[in-house]
Amino acid sequence: MKSILQQRNARNVRERHIHSHNNANNDIHHNDARNQHQRQHQGHSRRRHGHHDDHHNNQHKLAQGAHINKLDNDDYDDGNDNDNSAEANANDDDITATTYEANMKERGLNTKDLNNTEKADIDLVFFNRVAKVGSQSLMQLMTRLGKLNGFSTSRDSGKRYETVLIGPHQQRELIKEVLTKPKPHAYSQHLAYINFKRFHLPQPIYVNLVRHPIERVISWHYYVRAEWYYKDMKAKLGDQAPPRPSDEFMQMDLDTCVKTKNIYCQFNQDEIANQSGDHRRQTLFFCGQNRKLCLPFNSAAAMQKAKRTVEEEYAVVGTWEDTNITLSVLEHYIPRFFKHAKVVYHMGKEQLSVVNKNPVKRPVSQETRDILSKNFTNEIEFYEFCKQRLYLQYSTISNFGRLDNDDYVLIPEHSDDDQIYDDDY
Image 1 (cartoon, helix red, strand yellow):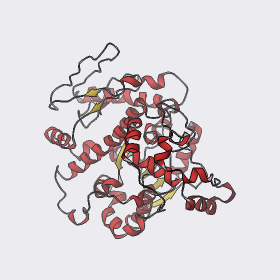
Image 2: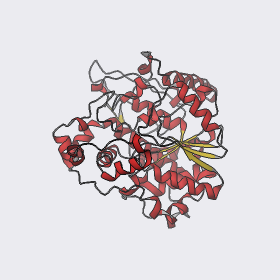
Image 3: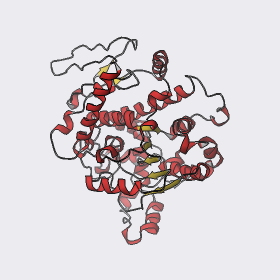
Image 4: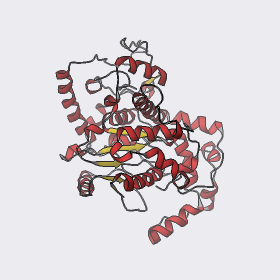
């Protein structure tokens, strides 16, 4: 992953190239962070990427302006072939979190370097929540924190089908609606990232959550096969609720579905639309509103765009798999909204972690997990990227150690409570 996690100030002047699918997973091996990257040619079809040193401030500002303009063009869904030419680099960096922390500490990285909250133009948190990551729990936490910290919250109205990608006119209307909310405010909706700056409107504080892609697939498979789900949707939406599928659909376990290559368990690379209608593309929520670039499944280009958006636009992207680290980073990077987040969460954990508990999930074999992993390579890389960034954010606020006064709420460090993820879409 090429980012501030490796070279400060280099991200706005990177050259990017499109790789074919066969070349999408070339490895980049790193020596000491002070040395330049070395790569051997592995065939005439592989191209060398440019590497960049740190620039003086004036050069950096010029490059940043050009880069932002390019991002604006990338996000438009105008059908131009240039949509994909802006993206590339599907290479995987095999660097541990410990190595990252050592390198960043040596470079003098601090909280400010990883804090995009300062870029926001308005006191508004925009939670464009990914499906099946436990977003309802964070929404409930924000509602409770709002009463304590003095801000209001809202979300979009429920509907039968969520539309993650919307056209420019709808984007503008949604932005205007959200901006009319009393400030400070936190708004939540299942939606791909929208660049407010394109419409010359103030940029909010973006936050989100991620979850391991394979766990998301497993969760969704059994979520839409739970009887209570359809009863709940019927109660909420009435005649607009989706009908209960056939018994064959409801009773199919994931192992059988994958083994038989059932239509609901086919994960074809670069596929634009899949009949299963699931939410396999976690990167889509971060890649943006460009259909041509962001919709292809497990796309290296979409992954790189999603990484860049997270790095440059998101204040925090957390995960309930590291609950306390996520809450600590939210507290320190967005204190206006998330002050006392750990205390409030742990005091109300019984209610916050059992939203829409799904009792029908079944064990999934390691064989099935391995098959799925081979089809989700770029989705998994993006997820790992977000976790590395989260760990770095935590490291900077704890001076690459532990926060002195947090031990009483930092146990356990890792959440295995799957109930927290069973929120509705």
